[in-house]
Image (cartoon, rainbow, N blue to C red; front, side, top):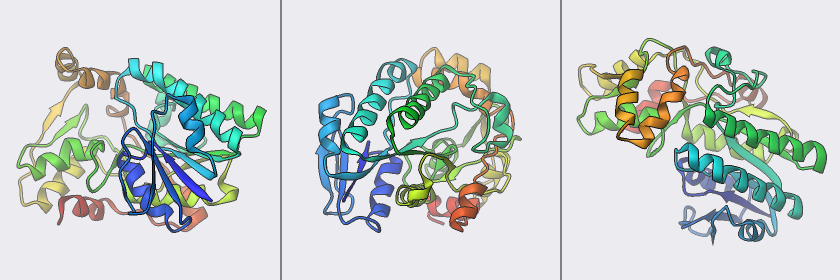
Length: 306
């Protein structure tokens, strides 16, 4: 049976395509402009907002992985995410395909951020978080009322080799590789967890191919080391032979820069994740699958080529 990645061009989609070859000889990559990963992937160009194309893309499939990432703009999220999710749910139900949704932590309560588990309360404090919560409710209702088989594969902020959207890459690792000063948001002395993208992709493939994993929420494997922003900058700088130095992006600075940059403006409401400890507990997955997450120093070495 074919396994399908919806939104195959992102940081996770490309890695996931490689991992899925262990489970299925046929991988279908769906994106606006899909590109080969394994050399023999089936490429299916589609806009996920088009219900007909999404339905056609799941013909003959057994599992669909929704890993799409939309432009970081609340206006786009509000308009497009519900349409995409409804199209995917309808197509999965029509073809009797299992759904794996690659999710983030935005729907959790503000008070859950210092120690997030799969049982943490849902009460999103941000507008983008409320959009994500709406998507989760759509999946839950389809499970309860229509018999959809689905699971949530949830990641913390992520980082990894070649990651274009990983916040640790963007703020710290990529600038160091370019001989520039790293940055950090809000409070450099708060703990912040990061999921390593190769671990996330491997684990997502494992979940999608484990029947008993469905109709559950899973935190993807993430190091249980409690590193602060200062720890990440210190270690990465040392590995590359530089003295630790950084620019702190305070809420005031973000608001000011947001007047001229829409993406930065969108970060302002998310600072509750950076001005307190942010710890992502993945012990449920690690115990169930005997998985040891990549340690931060090892992951950083891979990104920096050290």
